[in-house]
Structure formats: structure tokens, C-alpha cells
Image 1 (cartoon, rainbow, N blue to C red):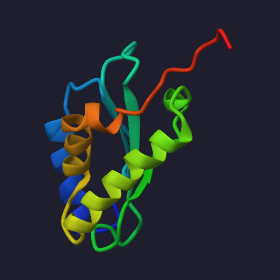
Image 2 (cartoon, one colour):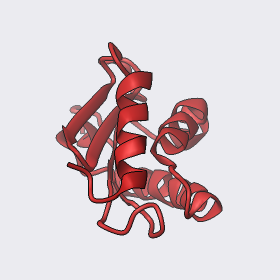
Image 3 (cartoon, rainbow, N blue to C red):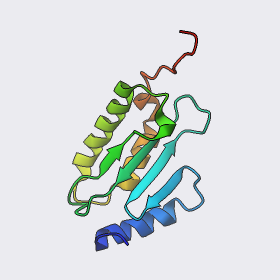
Image 4 (spheres, helix red, strand yellow):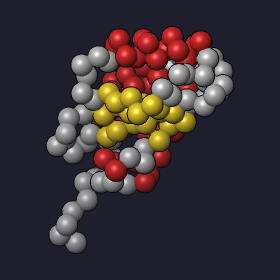
Amino acid sequence: MAANEDQEMELEALRSIYEGDDCFKELGPTVFQYRVGDVGDLKAFLVEIAWPESYPETAPDISMNAFFNNQICQAVKQGIVNKLQEQVEANLGTSMTYTLFEYAKDNKEELMEHHQPFSNST
């Protein structure tokens, strides 16, 4: 189970909101992934959010290190994490996983603006 009542409530809400959404994946009671964009979309990426024990009073861990993101350069991945961290700071103390996933979805084009798919021809 989630570590505290706030986490339990947020977990229930996430399960309800994303029920049937193939982009959402619950890896555990405190670890979630969301794929922004469709499979095959060159600008799709996967965000992973993990809640530490004291979340939402402390920031969640945000990762772009999933295998799905291997075609994205480190600078673009770090840029996405940085933008999401700004949202974390604005929402600290509140349930924010949904907010972070929705921010990533709503700002996909801007977040992936500098992404250049790797070419096998070099």
C-alpha cells in the first residue's frame, strides 16, 4: 500500500482517471509511468514518477531513463525533467502526479522541440 493517506487517495484517483488508458502504467503503489505520444511517434516519450515516503510534502522522483526513451538525447531528456521540476515546485504539498503527466501531454511539442531522431546513416 501507499505510505500515507494522501498517497492512498491520489493512487485511487489515478487509477480512476487512467482506467483503460494504455499510456498509463502503474509499476507499483508509488511508481507510475505515462507515455506521451503514440508508439511509433518519433516525438513520443515516457515519464516515470516515483513517490518517496514523504510525498507529496517532498518532491517525487522524475525519470526519463526508461528504455522507451533511448532514442532521445540526454539534453532533451534533462530539459523535460527540468520543466517538470518547475511544475513540482509550484505544486509541492499537493497531489501532483496527474498534473505532471497532463503538463507533459499538453506541452509535448515544446518539450521535444530540440529532439532529433538518431540516424543510422552516420
